[in-house]
Length: 444
Image 1 (tube, rainbow, N blue to C red):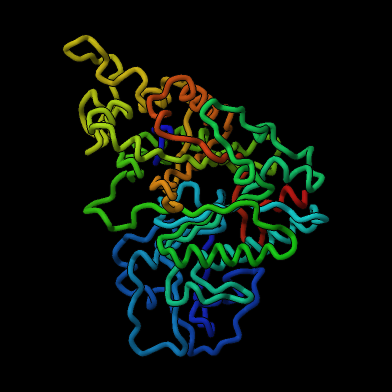
Image 2 (cartoon, rainbow, N blue to C red):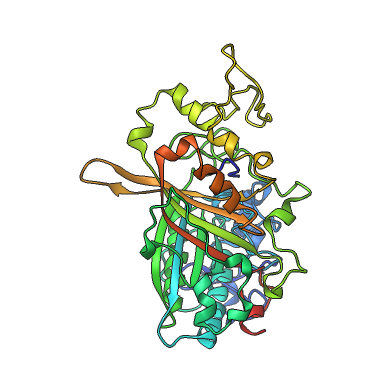
């Protein structure tokens, strides 16, 4: 777990029988217009009320479409700021990459079914894109909505789509497969379950409401129809927005602040490190990114036997504040040359934070956007818990691979974790209005 951890909007909608807003003709060109009466129309400003004035809404839109009941009551109770927050589906990049961590998430991989090829994949991505755009705007699914998320707002929902190495042979598009999508090398810490690794298609779902996230997962699964079947699926979580007195870097299940050195969009070289340049080959990957996905089991029983001081030496940072052992605050640069009274480095040579520093790895950087997971407790009392590690980079050969190789050779943390599944996916750039994700690949 490297230390580098962390347009287009729809118009007003009309109320559906499920209570979720359905779009107007302008909201989604690919979706049918609602036939509900004008009495159901509710403006975004009226729906959000004071929530829009808090300044807490995420995304460039700064507002969100939510849920309403029909007909509109004389006085509307506004959504909370968490429910009102809306990310945007259409844009230069896909959602779910630079958006803030959400409190609930699902990762799911699909394989195309026998006989399904390029045409079926294109139809599937078209369906998925329409569904994702609607749900992210706080609208009901176009067909057969389950009502799971009734009464909730968009809740910062994001849905992200990617292609695995095998997708290109299944669709006859081998010549369009990027070199950067070549399989990851084997690492000594790998204990990989092949049935929970890789896949033709990958979907990442995140939201700040667990029912909104599940609703999206169910809609995506239903949309797959006979074209694709689930290969594996994993559930994750993070701290809920507003749970701390002020925004702060997330903690993982080891209790460590995790994500201090994540690249930031404000940095001048951010796009070059995280997104594929527009001048790249193949052209369909312009403005896209590569996601490395790893299920990392934390051996918590062993970890929790360590003293607090020993845990800090493993990581190289204070558990309480995230500050480097060399001193300062969480964001203070780590002094790798500082020594203690005995002459030994204050930050141990095998500390996780030392090994993963970009300046110790030829500048290798990746944007970590993980979820924690807990899948129950075994008969022996051992928790099946850890990190659904997701990292983004313009090229995994220059991002994830060199850092993981170095961790493989002597990371103190490796004794307390186990990599149990792995995947690498090409995530194309965002879809413009009226397009679907991957259209340039599948129709190019």
